[in-house]
Length: 281
Image (cartoon, rainbow, N blue to C red; front, side, top):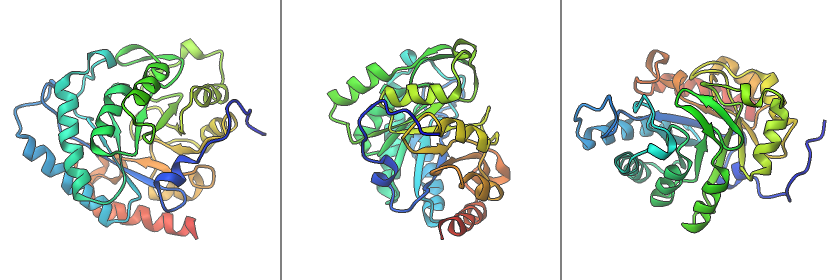
């Protein structure tokens, strides 16, 4: 099946940012930042130190990219309520990680903080932002969320950040999709490309839940953009998923005991990248 052509062809964002095919992006789940309900006054230096330690473990293990996420700031604010303190904290950590490793970095500012994420990315030299709901709308844990594509791309243009790519989820996890239930995943993938995303992401239903090859294929059928896995990859799943995906974002499985709040486990990084070496041959 050939995907519909809805926009002129553009450069492959994965090839622009990564040197190897099928790049693997490891996630650093940051400790709670100032202003978050779970923040208990930890010094920023301590939060930064933990992030740098994880970044070095990922980089030393041969990971292709690193994505930083304010994952401990739950319950997450709606996009319009993300505070200056969150943007400042995220920027401070990302800048230090950027200085500590040569690995390309990206940003996720939850929940669905496309514009705050772009601001951080521009400030620290990040290569991409992940946006969970780029187009259309869905019912998230935070309530009804609209796709921010129109505002976010105008903001990206205004701050001179067109080199920051948009990695957009299709049929995002942690939500109900009754609003768009009359549109297939394939059609929603076409919508995301039509609204000028750069890379599309297929996920499971929650953090760590496996992405199914069929869902990757459904997304790919609707787009000419690269399609990556955004949830649930493990070393055992690499052969099956990397047959159909162009890369992956992986967080929880790389952590000690596969708990997202734990430090990155170097043995798991090694196991994953060893599996990837076989795929890339």
